Amino acid sequence: MRRKPGTLVPLEQALCLAAAALRRRGLETFHGFSIAKEIQDAGDTRLLTAYGTLYRALGRLEQMGLVTSVWEDAQLAADEGRPRRRLYSITDAGLKAAAETRAAPKRPARRISRLADA
Amino acid sequence: MRAQTAANLLRWWTRLYTVAMPLEQRERRRAEVESDLWESLRDPAGSRQILSRLLLGVADDVGWSITHMEQTSRSSLWWSVGSLLVFVAVAGTLIYAPESAVMREAIWAWPTVAGLHVVGIVTLISLRLLIDLRLIGLRWPFGGVPMATLARRVTPWTALAVLLTLATGLALYAVDPGDLAANSMFQIKIAALVLALVNVWYCHAVALRDAAQWQPTPAARASGYLSLTLWAVLIGISLLVPYTA
Image (tube, rainbow over all chains, first blue to last red; front, side, top):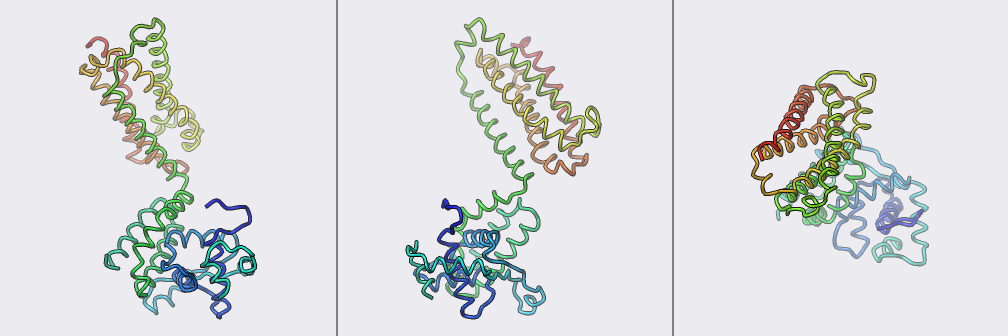
């Protein structure tokens, strides 16, 4: 999708809104699968966001400074018997982008409008 | 499809599209997908959707891969695709080329094309010589120029010389394709040419892939010696072709 300078594509908006919704519920960090579930649960889509699409979009958001990421402690993951998670958190700029998306009069997709109301 | 089978397919695909990535990015993407997969397999909806999430994201995976591919890997990819297209085009022309009325009847055509063919060959072999001598370990000529710089400067002109030589060679072939195709010396010449061009591809796509830290490895030396031999054979056989027609 061709993007206008300074704007977010619908998936990026959805990710910002979902991350902001998680933050409001007290979850400071999220990983790829949890944000995909959040978007699915809040929207009317039956499918989780595709792997390639999700991680490419998260990479773009990180480059734009809307989210940051760190790898969790390897020992913690080993203690729980699972692979290490890459933990993302939404930045102030990301929260602002989510607020602007919520306030925008025209919302590009239903799943985004539901997330905005969450 | 069972979730575990879909998971293995996803792992295989992730390994494939990240293979040309810089090491750190490759490991990060693989670890992130593995983590997501672990969560997916423990979630009823997630485990059912592994295959669809894989398939729907393939275009983004490929786009991401090309964007972040190492410069050297991207260069190798273009060399490989370009070489393959040239081989297909030349093979198709050799097999299906009709006789050319212009090449047979126009008084200027044969001398002009033959002259350009010689210019192409001389340019190509001269430029290859610079790289081949360096490949076999000689730091002469231009001994002070690093291999990466030498390869970067020589490569575009080599590609042009290859195209000029092939285009004019095919035009000369169109003078009498039937007789030439049956000529045993011409067949040996084409076989040597194919080997030489495969060797050029190997040199640029594999041996010089990391030209900045290039060292004369045994494989690179072998490529250099093979190249020198093949071009010498090609020149000798090309001179014999008219006498065996």
